[in-house]
Image 1 (cartoon, rainbow, N blue to C red):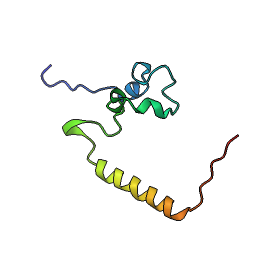
Image 2 (image 1 turned 180 degrees about the horizontal axis):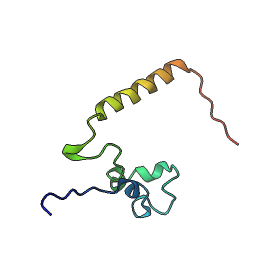
Image 3 (image 1 turned 90 degrees about the vertical axis):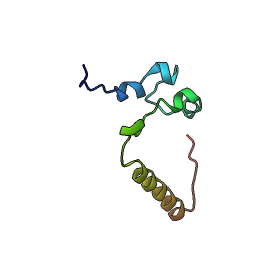
Image 4 (image 1 turned 30 degrees about the vertical axis):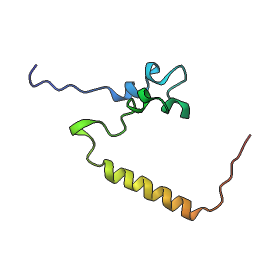
Length: 81
């Protein structure tokens, strides 16, 4: 037991109705991400000392991509059905 490795099932955690409420967790609902409980439930890069070493790089790439999209496309339209 001393050398056992324990790993959380992150996929099931992200798919949990107990954490994400009565709505389907596979569909995007912005209101589900407002509560304090839900902010710590989505482990996109892990937590603690074994957190993803590429977190800063990934977030930088996301920011640069968003900036480039906003600079490149000046007209945005909302399409309703």
